[in-house]
Amino acid sequence: GKRNTNEPEFMQAVMEVAETVIPFIEQNKKYQNKMLLERMVEPERVIMFRVCWIDDAGHTQVNRGYRIQMNSAIGPYKGGIRFHPSVNLSILKFLAFEQTFKNSLTTLPMGGGKGGADFDPKGKSDNEIMKFCQAFMTELAKHIGADTDVPAGDIGVGGREVGYMFGQYKRLRNEFTGVLTGKGIAFGGSLIRPEATGYGDVYFAQNMLATKGDSFTGKTVVVSGSGNVAQYAIQKATQLGGKVVTASDSSGYIHDADGIDADKLAYIMEIKNVNYGRISDYVTKYPNAKFVAGQRPWEVKCDIALPCATQNELNGEEAKLLIANGCICVAEGANMPSTPEAVAAFLSAKILFAPGKASNAGGVATSGLEMSQNSLRLSWTSEEVDQRLKNIMANIHAACVQYGKDETGFVDYVKGANIAGFVKVADAMLAQGIV
Ligand code: NDP
Image (cartoon, rainbow, N blue to C red; front, side, top):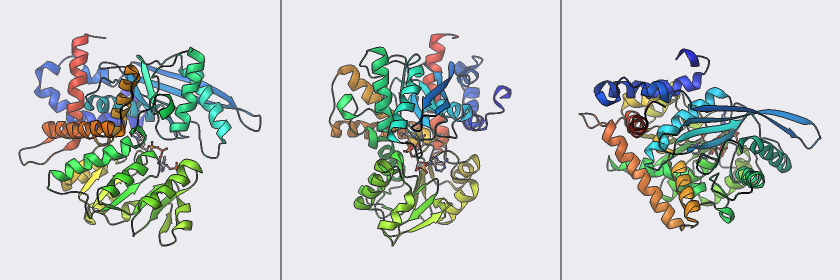
């Protein structure tokens, strides 16, 4: 830990894994004395670079770009790109570390990586976004490739940004390959990729609820965020008979007690994906809803909570409030949205709790399906991709149950996901020798 003490988010992610994986290693001789966890916490490679671009006013701007190539034991590095002013080495290392376990859980051949820049897309023109994406890719292109490292989207990086980065990669390399996922359908993207993380999160929750003979039907659902993951979590939870009553962004949350139906969700998509605006605009069109500035939605009474915004957005007090209000199921759509205190509260209350590395793995799994389609030069139908996504989420759920169920029948999905994710990467590392 000494090397990383100034990296709190990375330490947090590692501690959570270590707490469950170290006892497992102690019980399994083949994983002992090989420094497996010690090797896994050290990225294979970290690239940091200057990103220089010219804004609309003609001023030169400088940002810092990163790519963490964490682990390639089971496949090419794979993980998203984040553009947000908070981006730093600690946050990207935590994300790349989690990604390694998550990608292992999908059962697809993908290693772990993550990247991004401390660039703030808010308020930037489309031209500025394009210039930034091109400048970012000009350096990144030297380090990635369809068989080396395949980035995707994350916070602040959606279809538009992936398109600009793909265009620049193709221009620089004179190669049309599946080097990025989350591409537009016209140039190699997969159907259902935009929906996959949110849908997968809800499918995972559906699998958890089924262990109790329960379902989304008639349930009140609280969602945080209003970006890619949140939007499709809202859509699928609603399709399955749930009533979603909140959405949020970094300025606050909206509470619509009547439920966010398909028309209202279309308006959220317009606010966020077309106008790049604020969630508070929702109440101008739907005045029965209220906007609560500067707060998070966990104070709203619900049966199911889906945190889909960002890391550490749900603390111990909020977790206790959710439990006290009768919440029975929490499935993380975001990466590490619950603080360690919140995770401890959910586990001790023994409610259904899924960590992001299991419940949000549908996004990267579908990126893996996009890579397969690109390699085959084929496109599968929506139904086919959705069915594969459902199967993968069911298999991840089963793996968590296999490694996480105790004598009383309680499933610790944190333990299950960490151990199931660890085993495949560890086996591959052992087989490949000390490298
Ligand atoms: P988007 O950029 O589409 O949306 C992010 C949402 O979270 C926005 O509503 C944003 O609000 C809010 N948000 C971002 N940062 C903060 C912050 N510091 N405080 C409060 N709210 C914040 O990103 P995604 O939906 O793609 O990603 C959301 C989460 O899901 C992230 O944790 C990401 O790592 C994870 N994830 C995403 C996957 C994907 O396929 N996209 C796959 C797996 C995990 P605002 O508009 O105000 O910034």
